[in-house]
Length: 210
Image 1 (cartoon, one colour):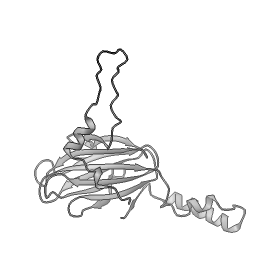
Image 2 (tube, one colour):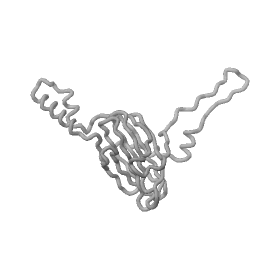
Image 3 (cartoon, one colour):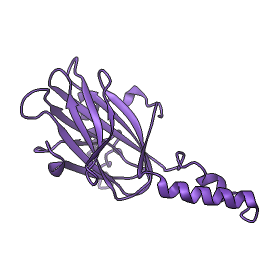
Image 4 (cartoon, helix red, strand yellow):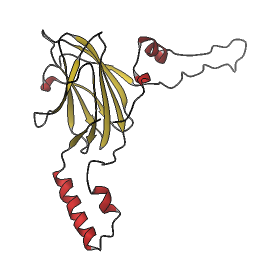
């Protein structure tokens, strides 16, 4: 997974600066104009919407692509009525997606699972102390998936940050090799057949370890 600077972690001061509107007001000249605000920096910020405690009531946040950079802020309890948050996304194209889930509460510990609402299956779980991070390689566009967030030990606020990247098909085995091969040779035909068979068997999403 790519190394991401800690500067991507937002504080209230950084958020306030990013949202501030800068302008210049002139006097005594009809040529003075307002200077447009600088382009936004950092992720687009969303707040989770409740209820989202079940897959059927997941909070759908956004369609993602290779240019996406967003964050969702929320809270979850270890005990009580809000013990799980389902946060749903959909990829507009094959892509790679880095995610970072951080507890905002001091000494917080949040875990996350990747859930497929179509098959009704948990595909992967991240449950380390503190926060979680990982990379998803999404081969199939248009398929919904959910981040299922829970708290361990005590309630915690959380910050889920997502960074989209172009799709390279790195996990697809022979896909790239057969494209550059001479298809007239026996070896190239074997590689092409193997590539097609692998593509048919490949899951729609894969997970890359750090």
